[in-house]
Length: 335
Image 1 (cartoon, rainbow, N blue to C red):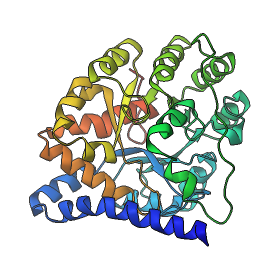
Image 2 (image 1 turned 90 degrees about the vertical axis):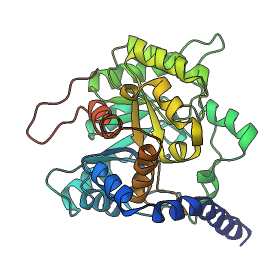
Image 3 (image 1 turned 45 degrees about the vertical axis):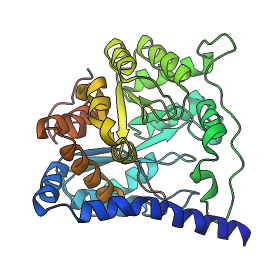
């Protein structure tokens, strides 16, 4: 009972934190909301949590995909911390009610359930059609550093009837700061598979080392997961890393809404050509994917970004990450 009370209180707290954004969007003039809806068409969400998951989610894979498809989006990439979502994406593509021009892809994150950096888990993800394999998230050393200041990640608390074991830290670097051999092995398989690599919840030191290693091993599609959050660094340093390696920085709905007056300078400091947009939506108490994406688009418009700039971040960059183009066209070459 105590656990259920704690979960209910956390859901209420998260929902209350989102309420100002819900009200803000509802009170925008019709023109602004219509502009956001127009910008949403053809957009891609690279980071959408859903069921099946041990954590409490607002939608399952079919519902999330159908909502995005009905809104005119181009694709979504499904995510869960504790299970690969490539099978759910496969099922959604075949059995959900989707537009012919819409795609659902799965991602796979190397936490404790895979044994951490496990090349066999990467190989399985590639074989089952995952479009992105990511570094540890809840089990990452960078996540544990963050929790020292901010507390346990809500996903570790907001669970269903069975409480997952407390994550055991998965290390990416050795004692000398070098990338561990098992990480290199995984990066090599990602490169062979031609899919994207995400940095998960790695620390700043881990992100820089891992992104450079991925680039050196031939990974052409690199996404720095919610850049600036678990891996804080000045925008200029992120820009330099992106220019050096071809990586891109993911900005989520929460980041876009919470940066306030610093939003434009932060994003432009990195460069819109190095930014991809994602919602990171789906946790119980948060908005579903489509509303969360609309809030993000409206805030970018409000902050002075042009439609062309927003299209780069919401369409062009994520298409490159996925090697995706309109149905029937040639795949997009990685930058």
